[in-house]
Image (cartoon, rainbow over all chains, first blue to last red; front, side, top):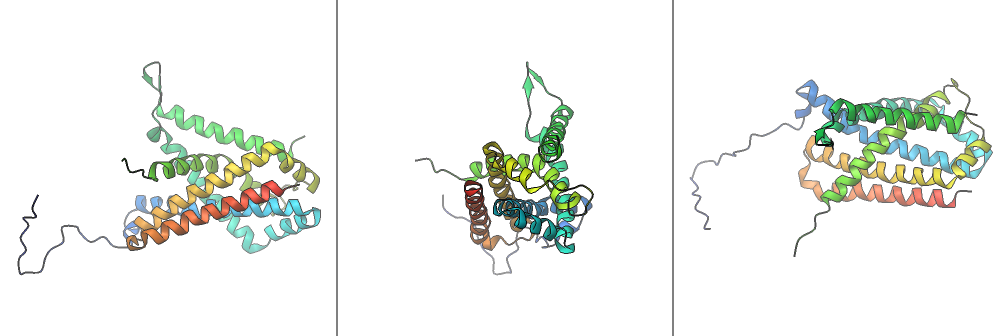
Length: 138
Length: 117
């Protein structure tokens, strides 16, 4: 098809309304959205922190103790407290959205969303209990 | 020929990473990031840590956790920068930096977990 648009001599108008770079500050729901997205940085940090732990344990008792005292320094502890809050926010929003992302039918009936979200929270409880038992139990 | 888009694959990594990060990271971070450093619970001794991580199943789970969580974070961060800060003109640079970081982290995780013990 031939381009049949005609252009005037006047200043052309964009059809798109310009959106501010700080659009996500406009509403509380937008801020919640951006905080949820920023949780990704803290998830990545958590992985780095866990890998440092694995490396420290591998290098021996001495290095493991150094890692534990390093993790108690104010800066690292502050980052980890903040990370925990963000990761919990990620988990909450993730589980609450699960029914929308995953529609399950059993025997021709839709499984209620509450049940799907609930089983995700159940998974968190079981996984946490397993971690606790492996590291502290017995 | 059908052009293959990596997007569905990346989304799959994103969503499985989201699940595993939501299930496993809170407890690990609560223990090693808060309860042990603040002295509210005694940290496990080195012998116990070495035997827990020494178990191949633990290392397999840890590898899955690291790889998937990193790709989850990379994918999310990529779109946060893209939509949130509207730096669309750097789309390719951002994608390479985010997924490149995830790949580097995955390789590092594999190395640390394979040489363990």
